[in-house]
Length: 539
Image (cartoon, rainbow, N blue to C red; front, side, top):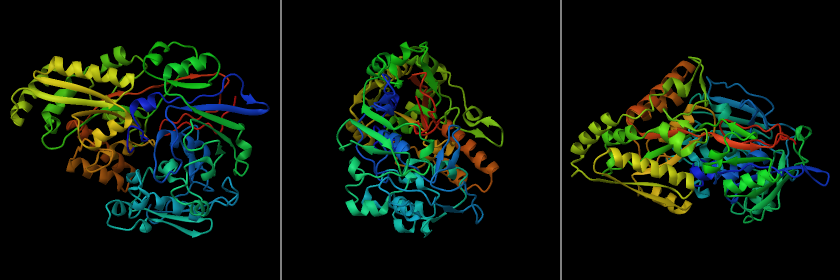
């Protein structure tokens, strides 16, 4: 999502080493029932309208609520809205009624205007929004993003203190899951305007929440803070914990050690740590809608602008060897962009990823033929200098070295340089197009293939490789505007197929999230897409 090394959808290593952990020595501080969750980078903001980082969204999931929230089965259930609403006007209009007893943590009532205010702030260019594309499909959003209309024209309006009307450009089959995301959560308009939009979300005292917990002890720069039970929460009787404690831990091995010493309840491990603990009795494999892939720089003059060279690179990478010998953490070879378990195609009854997958097995002979043909088409002198960029975590370095060796050993004249960079340097290189291949991932925000496929349309900010194909764009647009389920899924299948045919990206593997979990911890909603919800947990 955004500066992507720290954006929600952050660097691969940022997510793979995220630790969601609980205080393991005792679930109470005095008489308080508590657990602790752990981030791998410090929280910098809780303003959901101009940020979209992993620490932010992890925290917001546990302190705030949108119209809907996801239950343990990944299905939308009413949150601020009183019920799951059905659209009218041929699927393009929703009317929501906000709970009468919904309040902010400061006692202010949650109003329909709070939703309108938040959503429009998310598209106000003066607010430096970073996650605008996700609003596509809501009336006028695309025109607003393109600078053709004012953000005030977005299709959301408070038609009463507790009545909210949302208008779409076209029916959206995934709308209910979409609005459960943190970016669509409301903001207390009265509070934000009182303290100022620049100050909002910069510390605990400058933040209010409408969910099960509220944040305390966060100065805006410290690495530890606490979520305490929100006495104004509409469903507080369902909340068993008094506190959730967060701290920053950046190393998976440290997380393992803390878990072993009884100080963590739930540690997400990665890299060599995860590799060595696959038979641990406390290991829990959490399925995630998560694909790790190579972004290919297809700007004019770049080697990967040639489709045959792209396909040749893809065909020499032995993905099975990558997951079994380099990763060995439960990850599996990728044969499509959309990961398994993301969604079932209701028109076929099959997992979307599996029904659209192609082989992931290498074909060096075909790759060498395509490589030679591609060199002729580009007028190359036989030597092709390429670069792989990624973050500076160990797992990223290991994957880069494997890809480098596969390319150089099998494609004559290919010379691959590796650069593993700190977050800002990595993001700058991507933004400026200074790469041939960039290591990246997509951890779906909501469980629908459109969330993957939509980010690779021409001009999308999540598409730094500049993959651009009119046919692909058209298929994605048709899916978004599809009038029926049958046509929606048909266009999605065709879009995935087109992406693979063109080698728009190179999917490498499907990430498996490895957790060490205290058996006493229960009630955690580990969502396939999105972020773990600890609000109904206990220990």
